[in-house]
Image 1 (cartoon, one colour):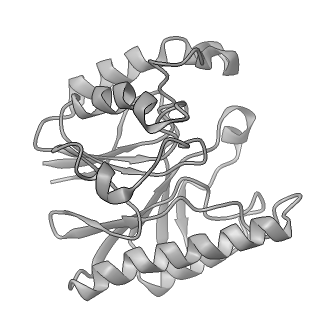
Image 2 (cartoon, helix red, strand yellow):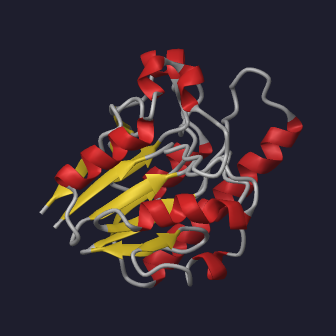
Image 3 (cartoon, helix red, strand yellow):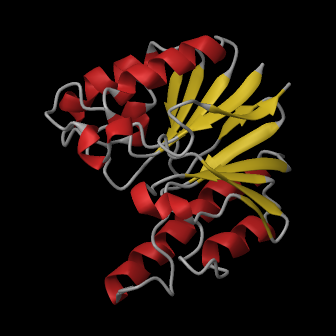
Length: 230
């Protein structure tokens, strides 16, 4: 049994949204993901997918993309990204599939770990950070704490968290997200969102004793990254 992670699948089986406009490496990227996935992930494994799942705008249009994910080996835990406009009722989403679950103000379990998280947002100190950004940022901090509190109430002390956005600004300064991760003694945080030139400078390692793991699909060559191998 192993735990893997990948983010930013950017699937578009029902939309004309080719990702190769962001570089040749994105050409038919879904085929690369599937080939790598079925080569390494087994049915007893779990894969964390940290946002930007589908380009679909409506729930009904996302179904093909979500079914494609669900049919891959392993259990999946999905959190929301900034492009996941199809995301609707969390209770409805979590009733749709046996092998795929959705994270929002709740948590799931992998062995003795609680899997918590939220979408996140750009952090203070980022260029052009506005009052509107501040409101969303503070709301996402509340959602992160709700998820973590649920896990703590259930008795879990070992925690892995998922964000879509990076946990810091471009200068790698401390943020509300890093403070919360430290307060709740989170062991590992996976995140994505960044692509292209932004991948030349990412937080990928330890920051104040918490391990941050960058999992954007193009950063990890469309190959699910092992987080824990039991």
